[in-house]
Amino acid sequence: MIPSVLPTYNRAPLSFVKGEGSWLTEADGRRFLDLGAGIAVNALGHAHPDLVAALTDQAQNLWHVSNLYQIPQQQALADKLVAATFADTVFFTNSGTEACELAVKMARKYNHDRDQPNRTDIITFSGSFHGRSSAGIAAAGSEKMTHGFGPLLPGFIHLPWNDHDALKAAITDTTAAIMIEPVQGEGGIRPLPDHCLKGLRDLCDEHDLLLILDEVQCGMGRTGKLFAHEWAGIEPDIMMVAKGIGGGFPLGAVLATENAASGMTAGTHGSTYGGNPLGCAVGKAVMDHVSDPKFLENVNRKAGLFRQKLEGLIAAHPDTFSEVRGTGLMLGLQCVTPNIDMVNAGYDNLVITVPAADNVIRLLPTLNITEADITTAISRLDKAASQIESS
Image 1 (cartoon, helix red, strand yellow):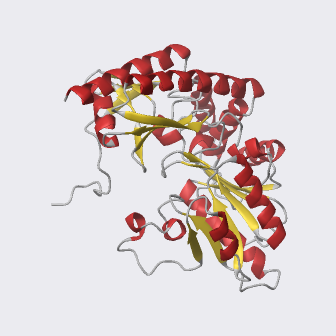
Image 2 (tube, rainbow, N blue to C red):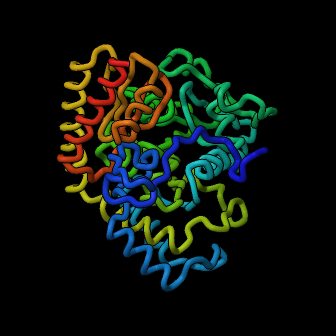
Image 3 (cartoon, rainbow, N blue to C red):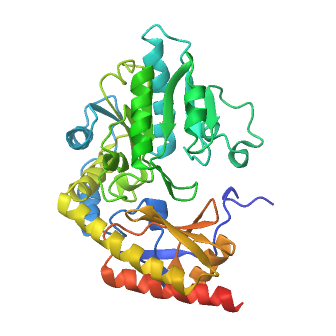
């Protein structure tokens, strides 16, 4: 008999009942150090007092009215995002998947309204992940995500990761945009080198294409900049944001230039819940923290400390780990043994990690993790690795 919750997840046998900072308490009382942060969502940790206050204050006044009306909290968050980024305008969603849907629509509508309706193709790359919607799985194109869900939405050109010749050859008069994650998350914590991101920007300018960046996982301070593309000194035309922007509350957004968004007029897109007062009140509180230069300085300092300690962990366990990769507090340990073994050994040793492709475990701690918690993380990962080696 099918369970009451649709069985689309292989869930760990853990039920958390309370969280505080970087820590989660299981129903049986055990305390786990959380290096997953809800898959890069809980940017400020669990039960951050400023987020609790923002949510509580707003909940006591107004939850939802719909986008038929002006929403002051939405306007305030949009203004804050526009002031801090390349963007001229913002559309709020409930998730990264919904952000992907709009980014695809926006790119195609942009070309349609310029009398180039044949320019519909969007170039994407192997190892990518853009959500689980029809557009998201078609964009990624992997057999794992698309099997059994055909016919797929057409108009996506899938290229190998980091193959410059293939990219140049793929651009035709039907190409509308290039879509890429500056740091692949599900794909195994693979950062795109800065010079490659600059090259993509130049290529889009040369061929009059839109550059769409998926910063759902790598954005909102995760890499030590507010958004990962800032390290390369470039700006996209359209950017997908979610996860960390709500600090745990379901919230996403599409940020765009005025030019890229020019086709999106009244009636071309909508959302019942997107940008509701609750979500935007929390999102603004998150932005108040992660856009602060001093906060980002601390992210970079702690990232350097964490990475240094992880290099020592690899040296101590060469039969378990082969390398550390990533940037900021978006890090991955490539495993020699199956990565799921390390994830499970972590559970045994009260530390949470997240599996990814390429036999990697993701380390996505809260951005305000303490140095003491980093030391504890290394200790528990060390015990987990020793457990695997002795089994």
